[in-house]
Each structure stands twice: as structure tokens, then as C-alpha cells.
Image 1 (cartoon, rainbow, N blue to C red):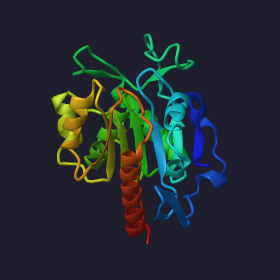
Image 2 (cartoon, rainbow, N blue to C red; image 1 turned 60 degrees about the vertical axis):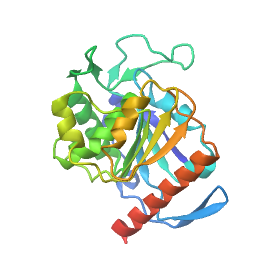
Image 3 (cartoon, rainbow, N blue to C red; image 1 turned 90 degrees about the horizontal axis):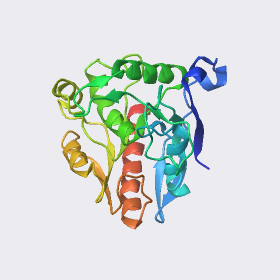
Length: 256
């Protein structure tokens, strides 16, 4: 089974971590089969998973749980609840149970953000206590945040106290619209291996396409659905396999 860690809330961030959990993950070798092929994995990369606007870590865990075990077994996924309780109605009410959270607040034109610095500090605090982490997996608001963090870290604006982010998985993502923030997050282009999910019926699809321009050699999984974490069809599984191979190569080069 894949390592699905339960979502933690802000009150839990101050719980002492046992010594055994604070150590860096041991490098092990295994073979994982996807679509009948095998990819050599140095170790399971640890991803911090950031949920969508006014949802929760538990909800994202269920959404990602639709992927086959042949994929999930290659990742060590940790699901975190955002620091702020939802300030309005959630689009998933009646589909997923509360509580619901949001990472930050924004203006109607999405050009101004409230509690953004607090959000960054919250994520870094969690990573310091429970890391190290190799990458981010984000959906919707969590994807917008995840896609910007490697660039902000490179500029010394965010996540300055934790190891460099190596990988990102972006599901229904977009770029921040604020020119000043965008300049800091996406220039120059981001070089870490990235996997992007683009839905034909997703209202963020045009923005997700624009985001691709800010990444070097991004891998893309196209799907016919809307604003959701989709299941993986045969083509999607092949792209996912390629991404896992990139992860394997990166870890082999950096941890040899």
C-alpha cells in the first residue's frame, strides 16, 4: 500500500515528533510496475499534498486515492489541512464532509491576496517539523500554490529553511495573477521535473496551459473531465510512468 499519512491541522503542528520520524528517509531500492513495465525507484519520494479551495487534506486523499496502487505505491504522500477555516460556502458541500479549509484569501479579480505570507510560514513550519519533503502535489488552489513555491524558494522568498523542492504534481493549476508575485515566482523558468493535469472541461484549463510556459520540459496528462482529480486512463498512466522515471533519475543523481 502507498504511504498515505493522515491530514494534520494547525493545532497538531506543535506535537513532538518521535526521534524515529525525524530522521531522513532511508534509501531503499524497489521495482514498481506500471502498464506492465518496470521502473527502478531509489526510494519513495515524499510529497506534501495541498488540497483545493475550501476542501481539506482528507478530501484530497480520497480524490488521489482513485489512482491505481501501481502509481500510489511509488509515492509517500502526506496530506495537510490549510491554516484557515473556510470563510464561505464550499463547492464540495453535499459531496464531501466538512470541515473545509483555505490556504489564503483573494480579491474578486484575484490580484490581491490576504494571509499569503502566513500561509507560506505555515507550510514551512510543517515541513521543518515533519520533513524533509521532495516535492508538492497540489489541486486547484493548492496547485496554484504548489506551482509557485519552487520559484519563490529559488528567489529566497519562501521555504528558505527547508531543502530544495525537487518535483511538483499540478492538478488543475494556474499562475498567480499579481504581476509582482508572478515575476518572483515564474521568472526565470522553473527547472524541476513537473507533471501537469489539464482537463478539457476545466475552467482553469487556459490558465493551466499558460502555466506550462513557466516550466522547462513539463509532462502533461490531458483528460476529458472538468475541475477534478481525474482517474488515470492508459495514456495518463504512460505519462505518469515517464514522470516516475524522471524522479528515479533525479534521486539517483542527487543521492548517489
